[in-house]
Structures are given as C-alpha cells and as structure tokens.
Length: 371
Image (cartoon, rainbow, N blue to C red; front, side, top):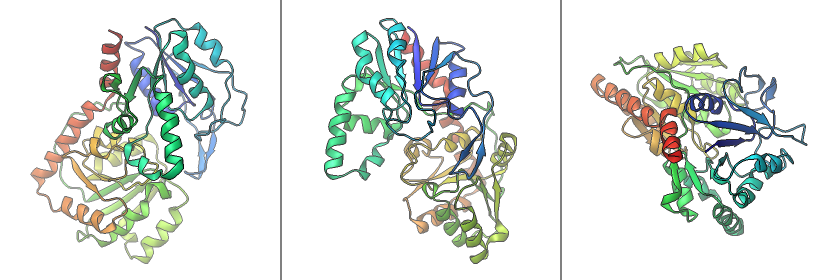
C-alpha cells in the first residue's frame, strides 16, 4: 500500500516527519502550492523568512496550481489544482491518501471523490474540541452538517491528540476509524538528565495577539521570585508594545527580547531555561513549541485554550485558565517554590511524554495500519 500525504505547501516540521517516515515506509508527498520555498515576508513575524532543504529527502511533487499568489492562509481558493484528478487516477485501489485539513478546494475534492476510485481516504487535521466553542447559532449548525457528511467519506482519522479526537467524536466518528498520529517534532535524541534551577523562563514564538505574550509579561511582573528572568525568542507586531510595557512595569532589567534566533541559538536557550510558557488563545490548535521543549525535558506552563494542553502538560507542569493573569502568576510562583527533587520529577515526566508524541509513534502506527 502506497501512502500519499496531501499538503497545502511545504512546512518545515512536516518535512522532518516525511524524511523520518520515508526510511521505513513508501510515501509520497503532494503539495498544492510552492509557497514557502522562496524567501517571503511573514507578516506575523514582521520579517522575511526562508527555509532551505524543505523538500529534500523524500518523494514529492507539486500539483499544477492556477493561483500564482498562493499563501499559507486557510482559504478555499488559495490554490486551484486541476491536476489532482489525474494524480488520483494514477493511484492503485487500496492506496491511501491523507489530507492535511479540508479548508482548500483540492483537499475537499479528495475527501469527497477519492473513495469512488477505490482509494482509501485519511484525514489529519488540527481542530481541537476546545475551539468548537467559538461557533454558535446557524453557523455552527451548518458547519456541523457539512463536516459530518464529509467525514462519512473518510476511512481513517489520524488524530493528533486528545482534544482533536474529541472533536471528531463530537462529529460522530466511530472508534474503529481512529489512528494516533501525534503532532511531534524532529527528535533531538537528548537523554534525560537532572538539572538545577537557572532562574529563567522561556517564551518562543511569534509576538502576536494569538500567542498572548502580554499575558505572560503581566503575570511575570507580579511574581514574588525577583531573581527570575523572562526571555522572549521571536518577533512580531507586539514587540514594541511589550518592550514599552516592561519599562513601564520596571522589569526591563529582567526581560530580554532576542528576536528570531537560529536553530543553534534556540537550542542553547532551551537547555539553559527552567521552563517554557505558552499562554496562547484561540487559533493555537496544537502548540508545537511545547514538543520542542519536551525534547529538552523542560517543564511547561500552558493555557487551557492550547490544543495540546491535556496531552503535553500531564504531571510535567501546569495548565492555567486562559486569559487569567493571576492564575498564570500563581502557577509560575508555585513552580519556583518547588524543591529541586520535584523539578527533576517534572523534567523526567516531560522526557517520557516526548517518547509518546514522536515520529517513532507515527511510524509504528502507520506500519501497523499497512500490516
């Protein structure tokens, strides 16, 4: 059985997964657009970005795209790929095509029509049940009606975590259609080791409203542990506001803004930090930065709105109520009140969780499915 992954465009962490899987499994990756291959301006990071080697190390092809200005946005007509019909006809009966989402026309075509050709259809999307609470009224009714009918055409649901699985269950998906395919990052192969407190909190990501960095800054300004410093790695439209606020709160001597960092420099900060905090709100369907933190055995503090919260924060940190500055402040103080022994128990648990949410788990589960 051949496995095809259908993607909107090349994305670094997915490319790492494909390289890993291609060592043991026959896979091919199809892309709806070439967005991301060349240097492009990222509005959220407020800078130009490019990533080398995005499609190296695995079989892939770019579908003919009639929309030259495709972007990374989840829009129905962001890319139009008429060649998808021809490519589907080239697959054999029993082959499996896994769509990463349903927001684009091409993916919807696959989800609705591939089954008619004898091709098995899989879906790997990010939507957590917690984000469904943002829909109401007629919009919610219509959305549920459409998705339930699309989902009837899908053979396998490759859920990324508990909240994602709960979303599918709420849509009536039966248990026998689930395959665990967790969101995970490139393994660092770092063995667990005990560590001391370094008095350093780490935030890594875009400095934008969705990530709620201001919540973290405000909570940090109130903690009782005054020797702790806060480090922001990343850039975005809120950077200047955050800098001004840190000066206003008279904590600028304990807050650092590092901007975008190279992978090597990021590694150093993960290693020297005590914990990673992700205070994100609606739109943070998973939070892959948490996976990165677990690779370094870091404890974590996560907002209740983050899609991965109940999976990646389980006896290795704290979940605080989204938007509650006081609760976040108390969780940080509680962490720094811990004895050293308990710090390393949290670190040990992070190391264990990373082994479950890994490329190896994905590979094992796909091999079981093929068998």
